[in-house]
Image 1 (cartoon, rainbow, N blue to C red):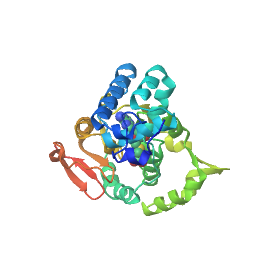
Image 2 (image 1 turned 60 degrees about the vertical axis):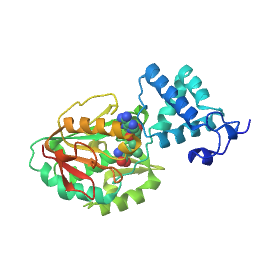
Image 3 (image 1 turned 180 degrees about the horizontal axis):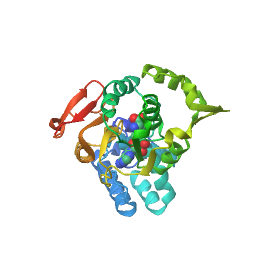
Image 4 (image 1 turned 90 degrees about the vertical axis):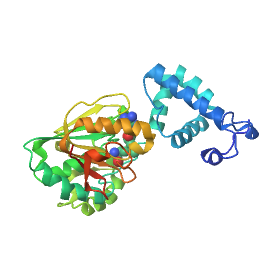
Amino acid sequence: MVVPVAGDRRQGGGSSSAVASSPAAYDPDLERLEVDLLLEGIYRHYGYDFREYAYASLRRRLWKRIEAEGLRSISALQERVLHDRSMLETLLLDLSINVTSMFRDPAFFLAVREKVVPLLRTYPFFRIWHAGCATGEEVFSMAIILEEEGLYDRARLYATDINEVVLRTAKEGIYPIDRMQEYTENYLKAGGKRSFSEYYTARYEAALFKPELLRNVVFSQHNLVTDGSFAECNVVLCRNVLIYFDKSLQERVHKLFYDSLATFGVLGLGAKETLKFSKYEDCYEELNGRHKLYRKVR
Ligand SMILES: C[S@@+](CC[C@H](N)C(=O)[O-])C[C@H]1O[C@@H](n2cnc3c(N)ncnc32)[C@H](O)[C@@H]1O
């Protein structure tokens, strides 16, 4: 069997994808059909809905898994997934890209401190929802800001993700020690007021973050595609998640955020995400357009 190189498939180029052994037979329509059938099968059998995820990135990840398993086609992957739950778990990890870091895009968190914190100060109690929190670094970043601003005890933070495995890491708050230098730099650029090392204890290869930082955090599995709103929030942060969704799914999720936000609540998106072209755009004003912070005004 000749398996075409991944690079060719990734570009959607001349190599085969519907069946990996015959490069001349590459048929994007057939591949699309196989992907659709696979996603439909996963949805109907397991309830996970990836049918409206952005196609190019989804396809790349599927092929990576096919190669890793020594399979030949998307249909072969479908056969495995439908008959073997552990393959579904593996695929969930492949499809839910969990890359994250503390104070990711420090300028965003500086803007949170400068623009969002003063608004939060006006509330006796407020709720913040981290949708798609991955392994929790974003939640710790927010908790640290709130602690330093004297607002933590007024807050309830909801940290959700589709993926239970990453939520387990988030709850433990243990991260590789070799990332602490990068996180310290991010923290300082984001307006950090103390020494970052105050927030964790170093143990061999690991940094254990203070459990007190999670005392007002509720972790829960939540799927943005299939689950509804669960609380009226004053801030919703959903960063670097919508980029993996196609336009119509993004729009549905914008509706979910709109419904979940109190009037004058704040929505924070990732650097490559925007409210532009959404019909909800007019419902918000920019709190900081550059850093994708929007305030719900109607
Ligand atoms: C790239 S991470 C972003 C983490 C963090 N928000 C950040 O910006 O660093 C994307 C996260 O979205 C989660 N995700 C993907 N699809 C989801 C869905 N349908 N519902 C909830 N979370 C989802 C993934 O599991 C992953 O942890």
